[in-house]
Length: 210
Image (cartoon, rainbow, N blue to C red):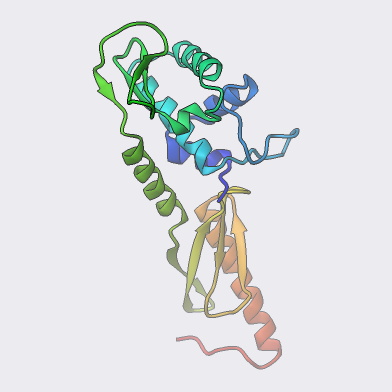
């Protein structure tokens, strides 16, 4: 399951500008596919989503990006066996510093400076929330479009890799289209259904309007 910048922005509550900046500065880069010039799309994994969401929560709690980067440099140096600290460790913050709860003896490491423990980030709960947001994004949505006097149900799907939406008409096998927005996708599937009906009418297979 891969996610483009638009999907990541919706799921993690981050702007596309933030994602672009963090990628270009090698803070958090997309692990599935990096941008390779104009028109190419970044693709993130679910583990990437966890890291991005952790940063979002820490920033919302008042921790600056500079302090988060400082903490990561410390963890990368002192815990080289942890490939992705933001996804594999449990963090706490008091808004000034970042604490890390390790698996070994449950020790607490102050990754920035000594301070008082106030806020604990429940990583498991956050992952469950992310999974719910991903499910909502992938949830099929049903609409109806009117073509030649008849209403046709169509099913909308979010395209988290290429962006936009793709939509299909279950009553007409193989009839599908896509669009950058819901409105455009519905307009395109309406045209596609009309095109299919035109073919059916030529073959004497068109269904009567009802």
